[in-house]
Image 1 (cartoon, rainbow, N blue to C red):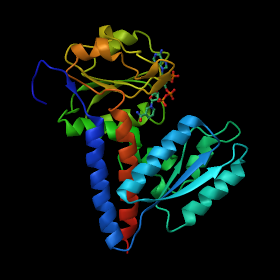
Image 2 (image 1 turned 180 degrees about the vertical axis):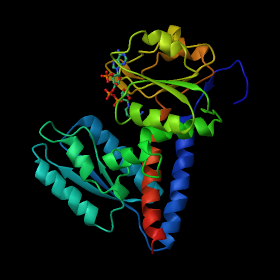
Image 3 (image 1 turned 90 degrees about the horizontal axis):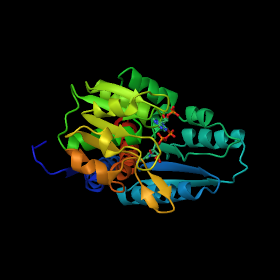
Image 4 (image 1 turned 45 degrees about the vertical axis):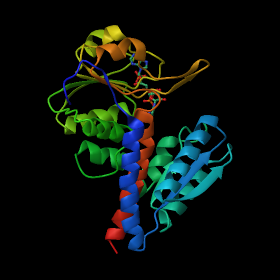
Length: 288
Ligand code: NDP
């Protein structure tokens, strides 16, 4: 990254468009080889945020040339019914990726549902197989949000090797897989959570600070070292609007680069889903 006094605003929307372009190219090559990529989208219940995410993902897929198979299940769906549908999608040669939109209703076990997805169709990268492959440093589907963050940093020539990366949040979909991706890229990683003591002091040690907390404006300027890179994963919908986990106004002037909300990590998550689906279809195409 070039030295400058100005804070760089990392443009996730532009990078996402580039990633979708790459996915489209891969999908075109697969199509020319007779493989039309298909993504099964499973939505259980009526959660409005989930409905919005599914709508956006379906739109992205159409733009990239991925066929979607829409499965809307009622809120009272049983585990057996959900798993039967996943089995059906696993067996369907027209389906290359399977997405179970989370959260699912309380009577259902998300761990069992996700573990049911065939590893080669696990385009969200949440399954035990995908996460195990990540731990072992093997090729496999990577979770979309962490992979999107790595791609954003790469795109802006922000080298993580030897850097101290502090991640606030240890969820299985963001914090933990991101810690592993960062470790695999030779960063020194600290993962913080709700029981961490001295959080602000640890955050101030970060060369790269990632906030995946789920609390609006949680990271404030006094928690950020001058010149740090700040990645805001948070999407917090409040009555006053949507906010990240970072208090942009107090943090941005202190750091060298920052992702905005919206327009930072969010678009990358959806773009990486398209790229994972393109990889899944290409892998099938390569076997023909
Ligand atoms: P989770 O609720 O699963 O995890 C939140 C993490 O933050 C937990 O590890 C929790 O600690 C930690 N935490 C909570 N409060 C504190 C605190 N006071 N101090 C330190 N750590 C704390 O959230 P997700 O990882 O699923 O999501 C995080 C945020 O990212 C949300 O805003 C979500 O909407 C957003 N998100 C955005 C995506 C995108 O595409 N941009 C994709 C996925 C999520 P503990 O483990 O101890 O409970």
